[in-house]
Image (cartoon, rainbow, N blue to C red; front, side, top):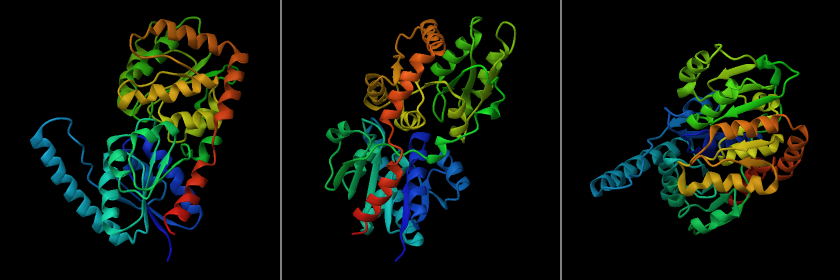
Length: 362
């Protein structure tokens, strides 16, 4: 019988892109791979563009308070799980891989009720609620960090494998942005959704009259119009040596252009930064479970691959000074590049594909 893998989860690039990397590795081994997620979120656009049959599943978000709300949640989860059972049967699923996000839970739970073996992958140090729930019924729990083990309870096997990276990020065309080749480029990216603080830092860097580098700024779709208007409103108008985009599907191109990356510290972002060997200045998001982004970032900092700025009480001018110093210090960037490359695990997707085939089909 041929393998039919269902990828389940999403919501952000930190869930979607590792999922697609693992899906691509399974397709390369002859498996049929489908994607179940929220049709209105990132996966609903990106997965079909990448050739994955897509099924929309209801995302049921757990309420933090209120007995009535929690009863309603339980009922909605039962209904969504029942619907996912029908989809799994229709697609002939032989295994399921959950990658995080609320939309993952109905599919993984449905697989459990049908006796279809399921695995989950957790990208961050502190797992989200969906992965904490689904770990209890998964046959295989795959982790990016060893420290995550203390947060999860499972009757299945737990293995630390790292965060999958799509090989496409390893190559790209940095020239497509039209920036001057003689100037180093600061790549600014706040994740698939964007980040207000990261955008503010980019604007301050662009406005610095002593800037000697170019900026490639990926604002996030919801911030693009606002940020473009703020650039136009700077003294002197739109700065030179600047490219502004709402989003970049081909991050290999953006990384190819970059001499330094200013970013949040989601696990998939850090895995890509290490895989391409780029020095980074990281501003972890404070709006995440158990402050896990700072834990992610500190690991790179300890290895000498990154510098970390905490958002609480942030001094934008001081951050701009740090960016300027790094952009002007080629030797420091080279040392950070070597440290990042030493942390890279570019074969994780292939390793996961082999684990899925050996652990879920035996």
